[in-house]
Image (cartoon, rainbow, N blue to C red; front, side):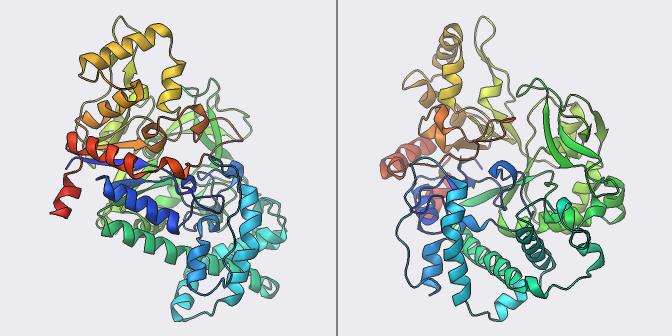
Length: 493
């Protein structure tokens, strides 16, 4: 069935407390989507952000970032008797450090008022919750430094389970409380989405960050040296985004060990995310086929080797152990045919991004991308320029050729951004997903991430005044015109 979706991270929602959260702002957003026939909400990873505030370098594959907790929801439980006034921050921007400083004492106050019950105790008994609570307690004592810089007994605690945790009990309980509240608030939001016929597509990075509970508590799953440091790191060689490649720094999996354990690490990781999301997009899907293995000593990604991964064995295991699993493959970039064969073997939807497939180099502009139905058509992603920024970066001649091509395709009226949005919606792709920045026709200031840029990413936040009923009606009209609102119409009948 043809469907439409919007890409907008939770952090980008407007709210009175400096960052989008799981409270009224999220419910208002779901209402807006429901009104306009959109049936897919795509978000970025929700895990606790690590280096550079990146959701792709989180402290845990399972934990949620406490920044997203709604103070209004905590107040509704009676845990914050005096709801604080709005936290004044510049519109359109997330100041992560300021938000954390502001929310921290309020969250601790809510924890002090909380009375544990059986539901909470059952949640706290989960293995990943306990490990995460210990990890964060140790991290706090060590001034938030990477676990590789902790005292030896803390670095090796997961293997030995030795050492007195009594001094850390209070912080462990606080971290457990935060995760319990996140799980409650998220599942309430997911239920609200389901009631409106909206499916949530989450994003799971292929790799995990070195400074994470995943590596600290599962060292055997990665290629590490005797001190626990990555012997090789992940990334991609020089490409469209960077002349020196992208050196992400994530540790490489020990696929031999993972295979011996029945890929238990992947089953648990994807299995938990399946409880959170209706659809899971695997970021950097190509690494299930081949991955770029960079020596840890290399400061760039220019040195490395492509190594084959046991993708079929992993995916066979996931589909066998997790019935009903629905995955989407992020299959962008220069790929060898085997990657596409792996994707198609499991009938996974891939991705088509208009900014990458619209070629203006020849005499006439043309779309070089796939016209398959089994894919998702995007105008752009969180990793590239907004449509307006991209169009403005073209030469005068390229812009002219693009406009002519749009007219030939039947998209001759409106701004160029509006015409490109209609072009994506008219695609034969089963799903079209639009970044909210492109729906709002925003410029470079609204870009979410610039790959290779260490600071200043992930900060864009929508202006509440822009998310109006008029915008909803505009999108609904387009969804109906291009037969992407049928599911919503059927529900209303």
